Picture 1 (cartoon, rainbow, N blue to C red):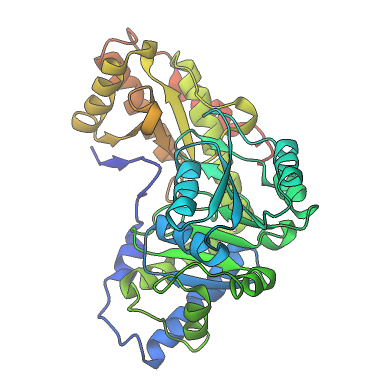
Picture 2 (picture 1 turned 90 degrees about the vertical axis):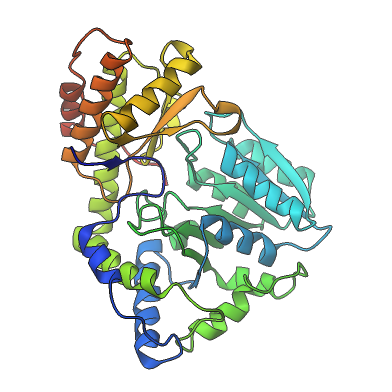
Length: 387
């Protein structure tokens, strides 16, 4: 029985990507690296659906969020942080750490943000220049509908920074079409890579605004990093091996095509949700805003001990690694990651093992046809995926 890593990140790394990373180290100030980073930046622009500049930082996704906050805020300056879960809260905490006057707009976990309320909050605070919002909240399995949110922000002439760490390359994020000023993603999600790189796109308006902000920055200085990358280098030592892998993972994504990638994620997510329902488990998120990269499931019978036992049994006996809840949801949910390197056969394997685990811990008495529910739902026409 092969090990199935199905948390919302890190995600499985395909064999051809692992092989691509297994190359001799090169000089990160030499021509071979210049060619590598140039190819990676071009591929990222394609995947981000943007003509904006992109920089690559050697960091986790949180580093990319920190870069956005450092470069887009000034101490004492108001900034709006829209939070629907743990990572929205993290965005806001970064704002506090760097001295911004943080205005929070918080929503009950499991629910999406309301564009009208965002617009109202901006009307009440005309001195807010930038809005920070999470697209796909992996702590709750909710995807904000970006289009109306961004429209409400742009109608009022503000900049918008989007945490797309777990959505870009898995869920449609049309950066230029929506007019997104800053978008952040991380290598360990849909990019099918190990943790270690964050990617940040910045519009001309964002770059111009960054030149006026006064938050201290050094490692995550976007303008400085961009200056180096345009010359085929990086400001600090880059994660060279991960960039070797990124070049290969971008080839995989290009071969499938963005629409194919988005459809695959939507199809598998729909199947997983159908299977979870067939298993007599309760989905956590608002059905109007289900994520296509992670499904959050309420603890069986609401029993935290049973939830812990299930996660442990799946890991230890069935080689299926799922995630528990975070912060206030600790013990109350478990989460199934289905992003990046995942096929329909993988989804079948996940659900079959989940069903066996539920039998093992005594939640169900026997097979209930969860795999049939999964495959039937995956065959149905995909529902529209919110941007």
